[in-house]
Image 1 (cartoon, rainbow, N blue to C red):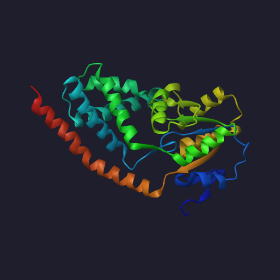
Image 2: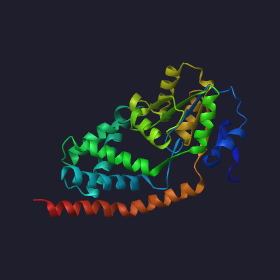
Image 3: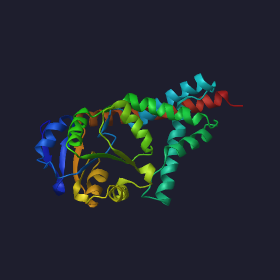
Length: 281
């Protein structure tokens, strides 16, 4: 597929390379009145991540948190220890979720509370961990300006624009990121799996959206990057779908960074453990 071209995917869905979103959506020949509501995934759709992998991002968040803890509370916690606590808590949270409520999601506030316990910190530290997360997210995310431009045009024409995200963040956190990175965004409402304890990946969050928006499913066009969550499950709920794919060079760089992070993982964890031995009793 040529860069900037649009192709027809399986089951009548569209695949679109996001760098040329304005032109590609025009190629789709979507009737102006076909979708009263445009629903958008958030991460890697409305807000684009850079090439860094999740583990790399978690370690950078840990480094910022370590600095803030030392500066504001005089508490020494190595980045590796904070990184290890994040991985431990997040894995445990999702394992418990899979057993108890596979259609739901965990909440970041609960993970932060668990992290403070693992790290032996008081409740005030949760705010520092949260601020470290937002600081790094704001640095590594950028607005999808071409998509935002198209969405603003839809909003001016009378369409309603909503965001629908599988994330452990609450809607107010997503709003904070959108307001900071795309202050003129047209998003009228944000639905997150953490707020509604329902995920796109089982269709449950789309059912929440349909009950709340009170429109027939075919009057919603959902845009997103994930094949299962944003295409298969959205279509299963009756929504129209278009898959927005990141450029291949970004996907490749992220995979390479994930390999690097796997190599560095033992070093990050090992540094935390050796530091704990040196300062231990």
